[in-house]
Image: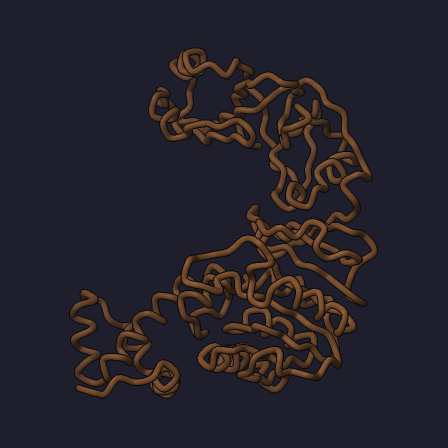
Length: 390
């Protein structure tokens, strides 16, 4: 079936009105080539390409969204979207009316809509349509409206603000400096003064330190991976300057707040256990603040690994039992593994550069046990710690 090329928005609107195409894709058990031929007998080429791409993205989106199989994305908007558990955590602070600037496909918007009346704003008409459809998917469309507009044209400053600046404003890939975001630092600082409160979503790798005085900076990790730095301002900011939040894959949330200079832990020889900290406490500077109440100590002033003689439980620290301590000498490490019972080996390092895959290939791993090799600096000396995960 031939057709003139559809505009992107027209194509998605036709796709929205043709939900049966996704049922055909799901039911098909043959090759993708055969599937494309079958679909093209009934639908325009543009529609088939868009449907197959969206079906693939919905499958990938399950890692972020519980209702991904019905949601609307393109590749960039899915990649940049906030995972559902992180959005839910942030949205809990909001109420009343919220503007969601740079709302994209609506990941944060639909979480905010459970707590507030939300006005999404985005330059891209396709993403605006996605945001509306995604609010329908979760049954919250009555709480959502969307404006396809530059944010500079939005004059209303009532209520609160959530903004997710574009970290890919050009074709060259992600940018790290906040000054290179769209909108950039100057606009973000102006918005902080104009709204009564809100949140700015930044990359955890960005240069946020010292850029937003009088705010709370929250580093949020999900299942051990740091996902974002959230700048809380106005009446939504907490009392402490920094916060680290760890969210498990099942949704449990643990937070610690303070200032990096609030606590200092001692430096000791390794005890029976070593701990790998969650990236949220590392990136927020709150490593010692989180470690001190647990009586953990550091191995070295420059290392983030911690240690204890007795086992400690915390969502901020993954624990490993130390089985042996070796020098960081490849010959000695290889000798150890020739008689060890490990068949699987995880190699970890933070401050010492290690060619991990090259080292792994040189080790004899003929057993059944799962081991961990941690190469770390212990009071200035590089050492190899043989461990098992607790």
